[in-house]
Image 1 (tube, helix red, strand yellow):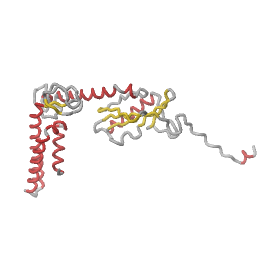
Image 2 (image 1 turned 60 degrees about the vertical axis):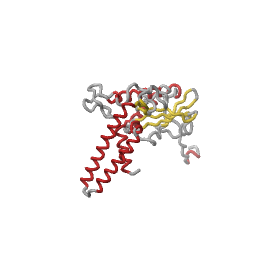
Image 3 (image 1 turned 90 degrees about the horizontal axis):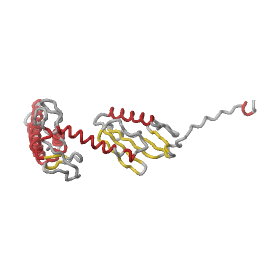
Image 4 (image 1 turned 60 degrees about the horizontal axis):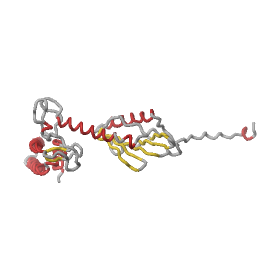
Length: 279
């Protein structure tokens, strides 16, 4: 696949969403090939940059209109699972992939404005005529909130020794790493500053709940608390190495280097002549 075709496909995915784009893949392939050929032909027929740009913009605009029109038509008989995001036909009540209850509305119905009844393009979040939030957007936000709530409901069972995360974010996960550790993730969607503020806020919550720096090399990114003889650790030292807008925090049972009760030794007193002779 050429660079141009990949760029066009990314544009299609952005325009109609990944699930819809996947469902209409055969038509997208045909439209992509036609658009790429049209752009190549436009470039070959002229050496003037302005005309080349005009040809490219026109072909991309035509492609977007074609894909949006086809996607809207196809979406009249399509539903998207709120749990696994897989598309299926409108006659289904439950997702054939994961068994979740499907929404009553089709994808196309989710893009109809409840205020002015305009049929908006698939993937639109607010009505382009009156600005009303569309049903699909509301359903998507509610589904995400439900998924996050289901994950946070596991906190008391898996992480009862740690204060619950209340610092925002979405697409929340609690991952089992081993018998002594869990990983927690919260996405802040292209907002690294918000992610870092949230982690700092959670550190303050930990400190307020008795966690502290400990060991021979104390560090604010490694906080510890002893409960009934067991030392619990919250590791935020590497939480942005994977993704700058996703907070990744590791919870485990472990002692800090040197021990939880490590106390720095007093420096040895220098011995002088007076000390040697007792003067």
